[in-house]
Length: 254
Image (cartoon, rainbow, N blue to C red):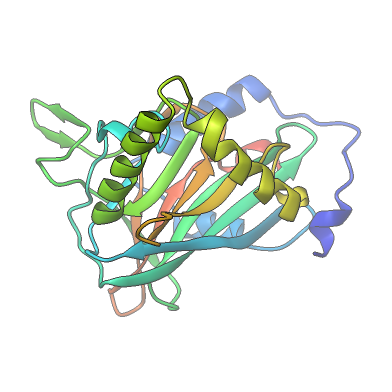
């Protein structure tokens, strides 16, 4: 796969890890993002890489970004974005970084809606009815993660996922939907792309066995937290992508 496979550990580093982690917490909760910061993540070098991990089925065009393990099964903290995209099936890319400081990390998840390149980003806001949190001055954008994983899916596919999990628990009342079901898919992903994720797997495309609709799951950077998403606009001011920043590799000297 190129330079990324030839990564070598650095002998010395001057990075203050604690400060870098604190800065990354601010980075993932920002209400704006720099287009060049994102563009620099989707390159191929000995510390950065990106690849397509699967597709998302969008039969309604209403997008939900949430924690697929902790919250999506119960439809809790599952904001529906207030912009509808055209119906269809869209590829998802993930920017990845690797270093001797933080290991392999998923940096940014990108739902590619059009081939055009993004020249600007705008905060993706939820519908008033579905917002994860509401403040005195209005709804808050973003979503919480409590199981170290994010997902991007269509509103209809989310309902299908919830039905699947509910039925799975009827057949497995003492089971755990990650340990006893999803874990094997992540391990298969790890076996297929071992150089691009941590042991045990960091990303999957999951296809509902009944409806055949797809969603993706990706490990959320450094784990739990509160994350934002952004619409990417092309030079014609049309939406071309949706991103979820997880880790800023610049903060870790990559």
